[in-house]
Length: 123
Image (cartoon, rainbow, N blue to C red; front, side, top):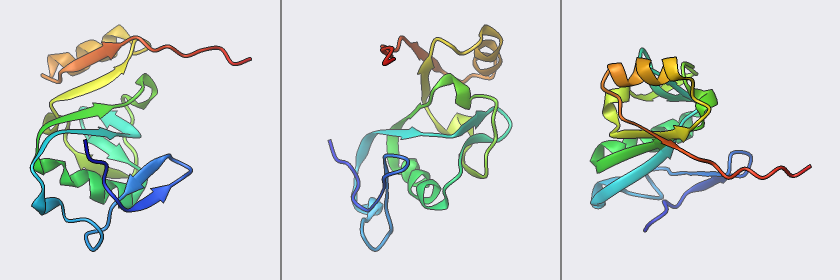
């Protein structure tokens, strides 16, 4: 497993890369896991931060692309498109995704993996 090097965004707990720091074209990537702030049939996978979007757009070199996003990100279009939904192999999300949203995406050929989360009550 390799995690890209680059700029750490502590507020988002993410890492972005710049071409001068990391050369994607030298890699053979089997599986890429990315996240998103917005997912819609119309606009695809999107996010707010330009640096993160530029890094995520490198997914085209991966054999398989997974998007991990909680159900609150669905049916939202945010600032910058990463790729269309048909540009990813599977979207992984939680059980809170409404059935009509599941149907809307699967009817369009989007593969969803609905997973159970283990969120503990910290109060």
